[in-house]
Image (cartoon, rainbow, N blue to C red; front, side, top):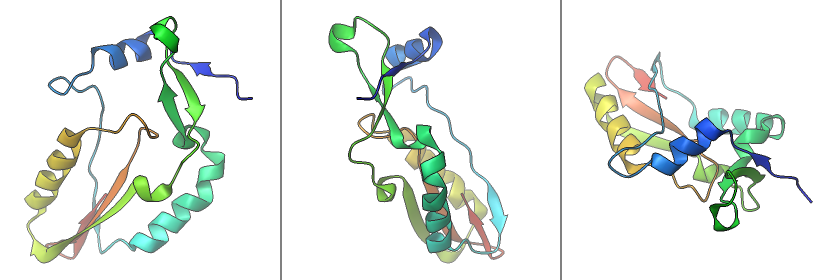
Length: 131
């Protein structure tokens, strides 16, 4: 049986104070030259996931909140829940990537799953893409 790895007091505090109006998750957007091969990106990541323990873990609350939440291996992990492809009608302005990012960011993260995601955005002007 897996021994739970408890979150630190600071990490737990971020979870406890987070709300829909005050999210505490982070994100970034990177603009790349050329299209990103989604299938190659996803398969490359899937190949590395066995070495990235945290990417396969989710947060589990302690019973009655008597301890800090813990990292536990997600029993139903599926990479398709975390890696997404968005194809824009080219040539979409670079600012469109910002709009897509903000929509994704404001939607939040499902805490029943590991807390990460990649969104590949293809079709930006200048033959660019974004992660």
